[in-house]
Length: 509
Ligand code: TRP
Ligand code: ZN
Image 1 (cartoon, rainbow, N blue to C red):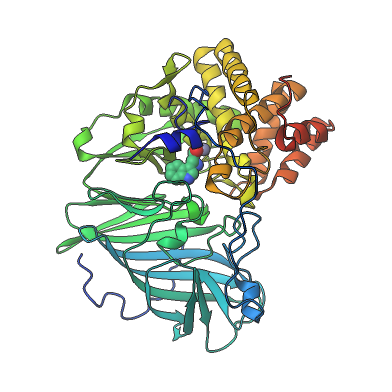
Image 2: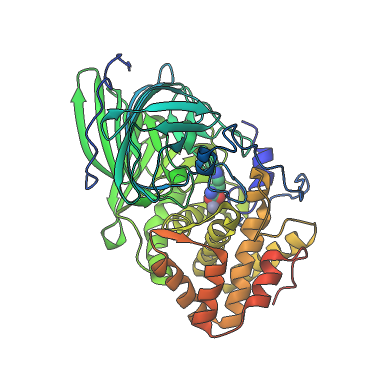
């Protein structure tokens, strides 16, 4: 895979230095699950092209004008057709029989949701794959497909306020999206299969409400050929042999955005240890990497201690990484980051240190900022990337000292000032804009500017309050600004306006 476009795209944080599907397993619907059940900016900016013009919004579906068009998409500023109105998902059970050899899945998704309005029909997001049957509350339901919308018409309307259970049986080879210029979704490397979906590819491997504002608990029931390991978010609650296959059941009982759901399948070695505060640290490495954790991952316990002290309790019961070949970056999937092997094994350095370690810190920080507290809409992506980048610089400060932090701040500011870039508070809807280095670096500098303005004690009180008050939920930029003003007692409108929204980067405070 060619790294350079991605390097330019994600210079800020990631690469600064850089079964058989026997025909019948899902013939009958199942009962609903009880869910208890850059660093341093050292990357050369020169090749980056910055696009300021907003791209055209995706066309609305052909149901426009009918009642159901109101249900097709939540009107996200960047992805207007993602997500669906009228209900709120509480739980997904994803029961997948996987044949990695043919990259074929046979799935049954059981989606428990609460109707937020009366529903004669509702939409799910699903792109590609073949739908075999849909049922609502156990009764077969009519359905149709329109682009990436799966439109379901239950026999009887669902009354507002009621819980309902939808099952979707489906199969096929998931298609990949190239929103960021490399394959997103269910990615088959011919060796390991992994899911990286941010921002818009969760809908390519399961039907759901694919918008970060609708977070839900997940259960994964993964049937894979025996000898292979299947990992997913959360807790491994069951492993069972079933003849030629092994079934792995994983539970994520905390609310999770669809884009953070992940599965990793392959010949994997598990390395487990108990981390600070009883957090289970589990890492999955390709079998040929041996059974020793790569150096940058060895510092995770220290990083976890450090971030707990600064940000408050770690939000989940587990943490770790799945290392996969070919991915030109790392993604903070909830409790199980997916980390590109070549990135992890590179020795690219920024300011004389292994930047890989900063990426490790960055992904860990996302568990608070992005995963527990999730942007309500995609235009607030700086709440993820700016925060994780700032957190990564705090690790630099703690590890190498204040001078290294200051050099990072100055270096990144100088780098940004050299060339026009999108304002991080509203970078634009394309993948290139959303994950532009400005979102990372100028987003991170926004929190540095806030630090200088209010002082360390107040800054960390704000960051802790943000993680606590919006834990397991969604937050928006106006809500963050309001919280910062509430805790500091200062009027911070001008500061955030200048750092987040002005075309020109402000001078360093
Ligand atoms: N959120 C990632 C980060 O921490 C960037 C990213 C978005 C990504 N989508 C991805 C990385 C998909 C790998 C695969 O910076
Ligand atoms: Zn990030």
